[in-house]
Image 1: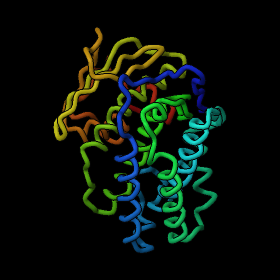
Image 2: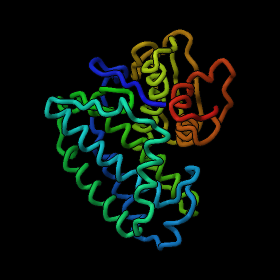
Image 3: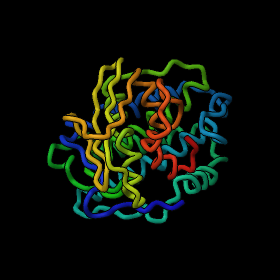
Image 4: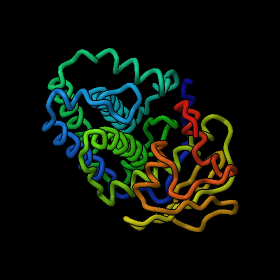
Length: 277
């Protein structure tokens, strides 16, 4: 399916915005780049957790997303947020772009990943508070740059695990990366519901361990991510933070199975990515 992003007024907001999205975002990219530099050609060809994609395919995908994030954030900061994603199919479009570069040697894919990491860093490394609040484009539409950066972190954090787990490597868990990624992941599916014109009114509260986090999302036509009181009709999710993040990212079941009536908390993301939950 094609996205129907919400442009103009943001469908997803955070109160307050994350103060420093750049540090976890750029650390994660640098770590993944270092991991890839140690792989041989056989490891680059290992199947990832993404169906039909090798390790190299996943990185080729992250090259294109890095390019998009850098351009989108740069355009937003210049006062002209883009609106490219109206014709984007989250399933078909990435697959087509990856297939187009599948014959590239792994060393070239790594070089492109490093180059696009540097370009993304050049855009976000020195942003201040007002700049983080500027609107730029992400899949749900126009969001604050801080939330765009959190989307970029969440996406690559999950894809890093898509690579390192099949390779038999131990994933690195940085608390601030988990916190930023999880907060965004909890809010993303309801934001897609709102974007698709079928908002669910209620809330989601997440309480996790390792790290200890509390996240609240008010859902409806406008999705609000915050740390205040949970609204009525709130779905409570608890468990290990990484396990919960994997579940919200459609990579694993929730530590405590969801009641049938609560499965809506994954519905928007599942619909956009043609997944079954």
